[in-house]
Image (cartoon, rainbow, N blue to C red):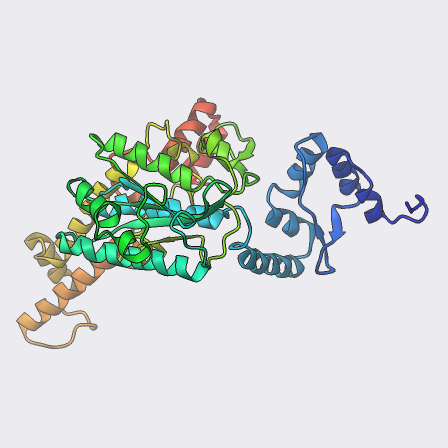
Length: 433
C-alpha cells in the first residue's frame, strides 16, 4: 500500500519520483545526502544529464569522491571513500564491466612496450574455451598459463629472449569464456609460431587439448610496413580488448571543458562498446613480466619512469586518428638519450670540469686528510655522485623530446583560447603566481 505524503520521509519521497532530473532537484534541496548501505549519510551518484543533474555536479563535483568530500567533514569523507574503494576492489573481478584501473593496466603495458623496447604488438590471439571443449575454470587457467609459459620457452629456442604479451578475459554469448592475447612475435616467425601453436600435428593445443581448430584458436600476426601502421593496428586492438570498460566513466574534455564519457574522449569505435561479461578468474587483465606494472615501477626506481597518456587523461594522444598516435616510439629515443647521459656520468669526467671541481673543494673539512691522489679520487667520486643525483632528480617532463607532448599541446590550446593576456596576467605569469 502506497504511503501518504504525511507518512513519507524525504527519502521515501525521492524514491517516488520517476524523472531523474526532477529527483536531482529535490536531492539538492535535501542537501544531496541519503542513507547508504552502511547506514552513513552520504551523496548518492548524481544521475542523468538534465539541467538539475548538471547543476548538482557543478556544485558537488563530477566524481563520487569530489561529492563526498564536498558534503561531509574530512574524516568522515575519507573513511567513506576508503570503504568504497575496498568494496570496488572486491567487486572489480566479478562485475561484467572493466574498471578504469584494469583498462589503464592494458594501456600502460602496451605503451611501456614501445617506450622501453621500441616494439609494437603485432599478434592477436583469441582462445575460446568452449570450442576447446574445456568447461572447467581451473583447467582454463592451467591451459592459458601453460600456453604462455611454453610460448616464452619456444621463443628462446628460436633465438628471442623476450616474450611480450598482455591478455584480457571476456565472457560473451557468442564465444562464452575466452581470452584475447596481444603479443609481439617477430614477423619472420609468423608461420613457425602458428604451426607450433595450432597448425602442426605437434602443436601446443593439439598436444594439450586434442583440439586445434581456427574457431578455438584464432591467430592474427601482422607485418606493418611503417611505424604509423604498426601503432594504428596495435591501438585499434587495444580499443577492442578494452571494449568492456564502464561506459559511465566520465572525464573532462580539455578542449571544450565539458564532461564526456571516456569512450567518447578516446574515440572508441561504437561497435566495440559492449560489456566484457562476468568472469570466474582472479584477474581480468594481466601482462608479461617485462612490461607489467612491476617492471614499470622498477624502471622508475632506476630513473626511467614511463609516461602514461591514459593515467594523465591525455585523450588527444589516445585517439586512433590522432596525429600523435605512436608517440611512444619517439619517447623510446628520448629514453635512449637519457640512458646515454647516465652512462656518460658514470664514465670519464670532462677534464676541465673535474679540475675546476677539485680546485673548488680541495681542503674542505669534509675531505679526509689523505695523500694527493686519494683526495682527488674522493672529490671526483663526489662529483659523479652529485651529477647522478641531479640526473635522477630531473622531472620526466623536462627531458628533451622531439615530439609534441600532451602537456605542451594543452598549453597551446590555452594560449589559443586566450591569445592576448592582460598586463596583470602577464605579471602573474612572470612572478609564477
